[in-house]
Image (cartoon, rainbow, N blue to C red; front, side, top):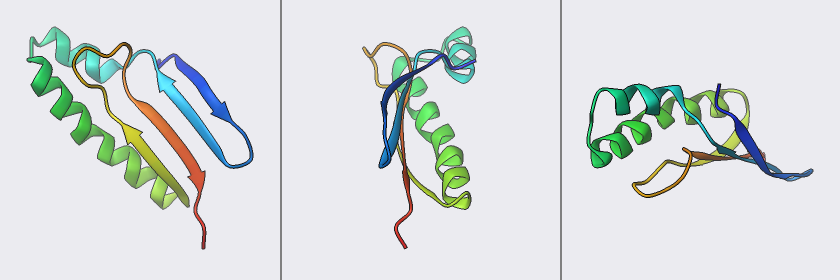
Length: 81
């Protein structure tokens, strides 16, 4: 669904670049502006941050910005206690 590209995977982190996103495609079909699309993707990413937090991981999401290829980038690391 997201066509993730593995950027990094080791004992410290997993980093992925999403090549597709059904939310992004749906909003583009609704003819939102690139600025609106960027904001909508940022808002949607907060749910992913919460999910990773609840699962016990630290995560960073760099959401898509106008002019970029693909969609968001995700970095997941172990939460240090």
